[in-house]
Length: 274
Image 1 (spheres, helix red, strand yellow):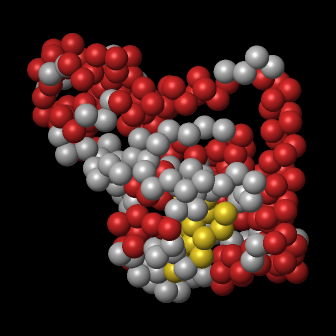
Image 2 (cartoon, one colour):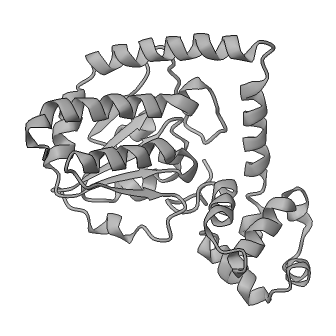
Image 3 (tube, rainbow, N blue to C red):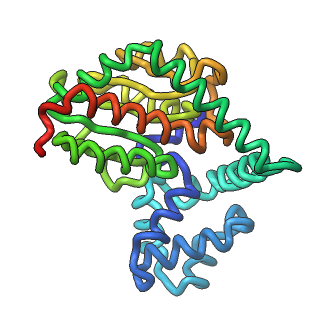
């Protein structure tokens, strides 16, 4: 496992894309993120002097940007460039089927049946009650997996429960250190990669912790009071961070949270303001 990972330094590609998507085009951070994305194929060979020259920014500005996205130095950022190649390969493998539409249809149907089955058999009611009763609820996830989590956050607000979402691209995670046993931290990590990357930090927090994942590695069992696996059919045990993309990593978390939201609504519908 890469010991250089942390809660806010997990995936170089998504960190750069997040800045590209949210920052003003005139900001130095936007210019540098755009430059690194367009030149990642030669990033490992670039010097900070060359970047400074080609981007018309100071070396100190580059160093500030590097620290902004969680890296200690320009060198450590360069060492992470292989992550981009690995993610590209996982996307190619995901779509490389002769009859992709038929494959997707069959895979989605099988996944829905699988998740429905495990949802009925798991002690999901405990998670629902924990979410309801917690003083604060924090959902922690990798930036590129946050879409379904953010939708769930909006739905929960409609049910009268305000929760907070923190991603690997968040500028700060100090709120996690302030959580107590009255609060609930839910880490969402389909492949388990993000959970593995932040395991040491999470294990030191003195709050109630739950994990939603596919990865059944024993490494994570001591960190969380509850682990909710959203597949019985697709099981694996991976102790190292590796790129993986399949039907579950693309759609499984979305479907799981739709079911979770419905169960919460059904359980506490009498409390929801009309």
